[in-house]
Amino acid sequence: MLGKAGDYLETRVDLIKLSATGKTADIISTILASVVIFSFALVFFVFLNLGIAIWLGAILGKMFYGFFIVAGFYLLLGLLFYSMRNKWFKEPISNMIIQKILSKDENQ
Image (cartoon, rainbow, N blue to C red; front, side, top):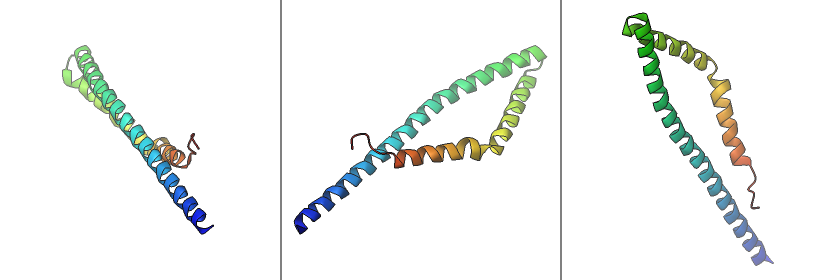
């Protein structure tokens, strides 16, 4: 009887380890995929903003005017995102990680 309880406990510990490993791998793969997508998006937006700044500078007659306008736009956008960082970023990301950790495996 005691042997069966020990086997059950050992099996249960192994199952918990496997579940934790799977969840950790899922979280890390989600983060890495997000980083890759963010990197491509960042390169795209850098070139897009350079083009917009040069275009605005050509329209306004002085190249640096376009860069100042684009920089001012991003300053305002940055201040907005900074003021809303907890609501827009911290809470949703924390909730996603917690949800992944607490979710039941489909194979169980």
